[in-house]
Length: 360
Ligand SMILES: NC(=O)c1ccc[n+]([C@@H]2O[C@H](COP(=O)([O-])OP(=O)(O)OC[C@H]3O[C@@H](n4cnc5c(N)ncnc54)[C@H](OP(=O)(O)O)[C@@H]3O)[C@@H](O)[C@H]2O)c1
Image (cartoon, rainbow, N blue to C red; front, side):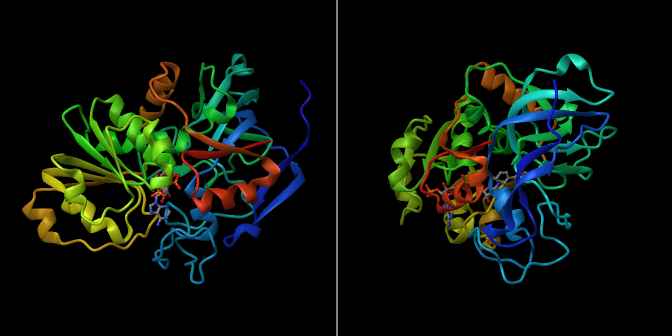
């Protein structure tokens, strides 16, 4: 197969507003390194990490909710998820579904032609479990908002599924994050899990993956999205921020809060946890700075687990759930790659349920 030497790519030129994302039609096509595969991108899903890295929201100098716009005071030292600077230009995009079209010298040639989705966690090959030696696809190296991308062969996972490329491109980041949260909080069929932001990528995945474990699940979402959220199978759906959450919950006993929202409502979420309950968190889209009453934390014997770098077995497990049809995609919309800015504006507006994907 003859491959083109250049490609179309949406390239992020620096931290700032949406106008930092620039269309290039003659960007050099990447060459796979010795341990890499070259993927022709079929679709690439969007995530808040693209937005947060571009805007610099991860910097400790920023204390507001995610807005998608540039922030005035982004620290030079810590503008990314890992607390370190990255270099630009950078092709973002973590959730690729596509086909392997070439491999590096150390990779089995038979992998050419494989349909794959990407595992975003770039690990040190000699220390796969070392969370301190990790990067993220589309952050510390170029990702999938382009016609082609490369990734370590280990990060391209074969998937056999009747789902479309766009549907498969909704899974990797949000579902692996959700499964990582539930794994770290050891959620079982004995739990009742409260999920704020259940209309979102991670929240919808939390609903499905907690149900897969047999837990009882109570979803929280804006009322306009309740019909879509109901399709994900929660046992109960509440509004985004009920005035009296305990009363809204009735006789439900919350053993786990699985949260990516945070923000001003956060103390209310903590307050409904049963004694011995667990709070597991992977995000703070409504604001990273919250009020914690330490008395609630210790007098009620709570456990808090943060979760970002997932353990290596989470992604293969996720592939199995996809192939067994145990989880389903929530694809809200697809846009052409060249309209990534419009797609990201819609993603930031949050009128959708699930995820938005771009297609080269
Ligand atoms: N640590 C990790 O590895 C990791 C991985 C993935 C995501 N995350 C983080 O997790 C958070 C959520 O990600 P996601 O992909 O699930 O997001 P998403 O698809 O954008 O969904 C977030 C949901 O939160 C709800 N929400 C409540 N208050 C909100 C507010 N003030 N602003 C915006 N939305 C609000 C919205 O639902 P309603 O309108 O229905 O209330 C929205 O659907 C982000 O901060 C993201 O960076 C972290």
